[in-house]
Image 1 (cartoon, one colour):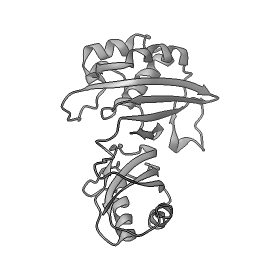
Image 2 (tube, one colour; image 1 turned 180 degrees about the horizontal axis):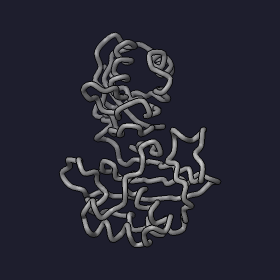
Image 3 (cartoon, helix red, strand yellow; image 1 turned 90 degrees about the vertical axis):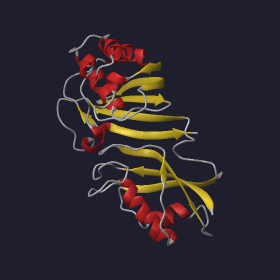
Length: 244
C-alpha cells in the first residue's frame, strides 16, 4: 500500500460543496466513486480543504492509500476516464506514509474574481461575481492592509461555523484589475468558512464608496458578524494552490 496524492481541478457549479453529505451530490462522492472504479476497491480520501457549494478549484489536493502497479504518469488519465468533464485529476505523486493532504498543508492560496461591468458576461458568468458598480481598487487595497497578520476574524466567519477559535493568519492580499476583471488573491495559513467571501463583500462596499476605507478594520475589532459586509457569491471563488 502506498500513499498517493492527487491534484484535483473542478467546477463547483453543479455540486453541494466538496465534503460528502446526505441526499446531495458532492465532489468527494464523485471522486471516491471514480477511484473505486479505477482501483477496484472502496477508497476514502483525505482532502486539503472543504470548499463550499459553487466554489471552484484549480489545486485541491487529496491523498489515500492504494495498492496498484499502474504507472504514476498514467494514473490521472485513467481516473479521468471515470470522472465527469467538470472534475479532473491534473497531477499525481507518491508521498510519505505520514503525509496528509489536510494536516500537512502549510498554507493555501485562493483567488476571487469579480466581473466589474454594467452588463453581465456570457463567458465569465459561472466563474465570477458580476458586480455592476465601478470599484475603486486603490481604496480596496488600502482597506485590505488590516487583514495581514494574525487576528481574531470572528466578524468574518459564517454564522453556522463550528470552530475552536476564529484566530487565523493571512500572509498577503493582492488586488489587481485587468480590464473588467478585478482579481483578489489571498494567501493564508487557513481560512474560516465563508471568510474570503465576507471579506470580498466588505471590500466591494468599500470600493463602491458605500463604506469608508476603515470599515473592514473596524468590523474585525468588533468581533461581530453583523458588523461586517455581506457574503459575496460562491462562483467567484477558486482554490488555487495548497502549499506544503
